[in-house]
Image (tube, rainbow, N blue to C red; front, top):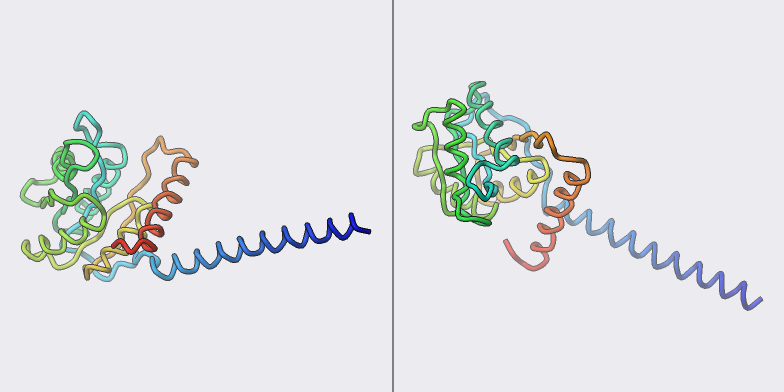
Length: 205
């Protein structure tokens, strides 16, 4: 009898713990989705003043990284399709000495975009600063709206800060690099969303 009762109590306790963990996880997911809203991907106009491309690190040798290339290529595609007037690249140097926006600009020029149609922001070191500094520079350049270009796993974060700083924007998804496996892509989604959520609870940004 005691053994049966002990087993029932143990099962009940484990169920309570599991239920508590599951409930806690659901609560955190709800809070996350409430704070970091679904990206605004519906185009509100036929043509935007610029494609605002989120920065990411270049390769150590100064060449554009695989992720960087996908973002630039998407922006150039938008320009070729007549959906944006100019290209606006953001990003200073973060993980190496190379200025991200300048590397992206050089790549865009190689892809056929005239240099006079490209604007660069060279000081930001995070997505938060990408949007904050770009807002002021866009106004100085007479750019009133933008298509924010980044990869799918980075979309919600970029959307959050674009809205925070009052940009008139639409989110535009760049393709993933060809060699990106499922596990690597999943890890990018999980890690960046977790980082956003932890920063939210720490009161950052």
